[in-house]
Image (cartoon, rainbow, N blue to C red; front, side, top):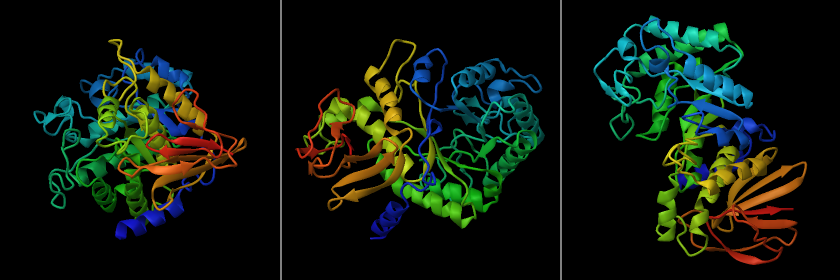
Length: 422
């Protein structure tokens, strides 16, 4: 019952995060590990890029104390500027020479998850980076996917999480965040500062709440979060509501929420769809089109319920991505990203809600070109009979070639969104 009440409140708030403004291209972000394998992404229409897993973090840029190598980061920033992409740079992880625990295992070897032994090393690194890229990097994020394994309030798999990216305390993280905020605002005051990114291991919202309670909320402009929900993007809705409530509680009403990582293992979900185990729940829908369906639903749900940036992870990743140097490619999904940007850019979202006895979702949008609505069902919902409104100028199943649906016609609505223009 509490969830239903919460969902009702969320629906009333739909579409308000952009203040009634149309979605612009900055909302559509991505990751690209290598420039040469991400070149096709530059023509999709993305407006933002987050640099992580790109060989541009602290351990990469300052491999030895006082010796900086900016060659790779310079090239990413240069290419991003050439392609009109706003850059978010994630600053951590710790080089082994600076680590408080040099031999501790971490995601990239040893020492990288621990805070620095001397915070002055962190301060010098941050100041050096911000000075070099003043006016060219839009936002700075202190750390990726933080966990607090020693925090008494958080037990593993209840809230602490796997400490492969950050293994320090909340207090130490607040100190690191304070340095980033003060250095950025002193050197490049027009740049924005993101919180550390919080993720799905354990109670992610509880981790963010404790960070803000410890004083971290004073040192960021926007909250960074990783809203991975795979085959059911709509499950992010109550999480976003909890985040918004936490921000409001700490007086951070102006802070926006950035979904700095999201992705879908397409092959896994296509196989599930084929077996009708998870995604479709019924025979409605083409399993081959699940990538198109989930990409649109992910971006649309984020936009509708209060997220201001969405960064897909990652264009050239073998599980979640579009292409790799070994000739791996998902041409269908690559086209879909461009279709999503074309469909949503410039649209103002009037709201998203469950309709017809909670059988399907409806998102309503408008732009100078007219009104539009998008309809689909949850993965586990029963099949829903749906009739194309008689007032529709056009209607189609998103991601399919051709296949217009005449006004007044009926179909069995499934996980594939139906786009209707009025």
